[in-house]
Length: 213
Image (cartoon, rainbow, N blue to C red):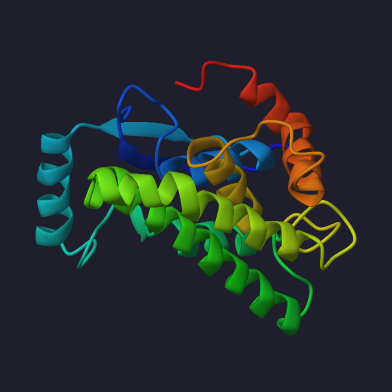
């Protein structure tokens, strides 16, 4: 399926530590790829971002801009999770069908982003032997246990069961970037089913087979 947004651009840093998928920009890119959305990916270095940030503020396009963000016909939409939610609502895809499940999906998004923050703290915000060791030996395992339990509460491979929703893309990327997608059949069977379901979605499978630059 191809969904057209006029002049959609995704802005994020260029490859981080040599990885073209590192960071929150990939959450959005995975959703866009799965949905068949055409977009331009604008990759910025540090100085380019500082210059653009000041321009966004001075032109009153955004009061407190951060990366990643998107523009549609030049209009700014910021923050990874709110932007994923906005696009999902526009598409009528990747959202729950009732208020109760919507609240649940939003709570799952918060839990995923808590993991993102712990990962970022270990490797970017406060990197030292203690924070890295805690993340790699304790916090990754805690995250997999949490999501194994969450995924077990619904019938189906995704966070909401049979229905894929926007935080699934962020969770999958965290398991790629901040954990591992190695076979977990014996230790975390629900996580394993989730990973395989994401990897085998037709558009994602095609995208994951590329170099993802």
